[in-house]
Image (tube, rainbow, N blue to C red; front, side, top):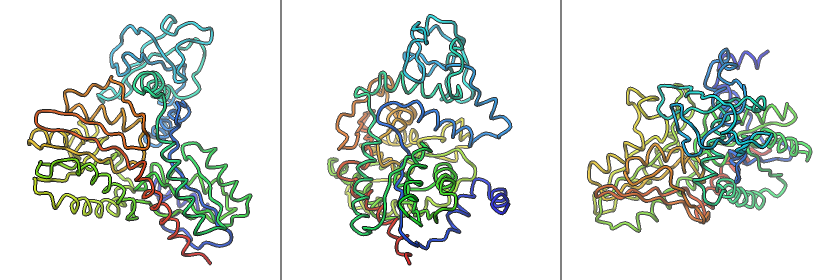
Length: 449
């Protein structure tokens, strides 16, 4: 009853206010450590995208309309040649969330009976429609989630990703491996496991495995999010860990890695390497891009200054000695457009690039400081919105990324401005991200009795 009352009082901030701020940080007995990341797979897995989108909508919309919005009436299909369509058209081919172009009988979906479903958010120019096929029954996930997974399967993996693989899991695995080595060297009796919090079974396996090995305290840390949010960390992953432990171990959430200097250093070193290639006398607009969110009350907004204020100071120190004109600006990749932000309280990354072009900066360098590894959001979803500042950008052109030991760099030109997307702190920068994870866990281990 007490926990129910607390949930009613704090709502979405229950995880932060109760499970984090009021947690017992004393490490007793043998420690177990979970180092977690989002879990985006290397090869396309429709379960990842449908689960993530299901969480988005379940978290964002009132419970009483969820059955309608999250309905599963059949298979949501996308034409990879026209994946962003908002109006009905005659598709040349159709693909489902599993990457199949045919129904169970082997007949192409494009030759079957289907019907057009318009965008759910009609006023949102970024939303798109899909085709619904009911001949094989339900699709196994809400249609609104299936359509995203179908777009990813047919358009991203089917056309835009030449390698047919995404770097996230491999690049995160390197961070985990390096952080694990540091922790084992310092705390040899600790048991360390990896988890992917968008896969509840992965979190359950990690928690139950630590308890089975006699761990009385479990320290949870997400190394992929520099700033923790209610949406992913406090209200999702942390509550999941508590639920699977079910009182069998004391759960401690180690603090966000962005509070540690090495995490910020990873981005400043990445920026420094880019700037070393730019003539010092050239004018520069340095763009620090955030992911962005649409929520009115989000703990991320409360906690982000702990990361962003010192990061901005360190970035300003980096560019301060340049003889050429230099300016720094923050931007939002998502939820800063006319639909989500009609009062223009936020500054989009698109507008940041346009500022550079309109004001005649020689270079606009973007550092995506909310991501430690490359993913389909950055490569495609965010790219479509921000890179259209450059007329040469074509969202239908494949994006090669063969060397995952180097950040994915993208370069565009408009007028006198060269725009450089610097990519994520991977490869040689991963050691710094891992060191931040180590330091966050070490802060908890200092309370060991």
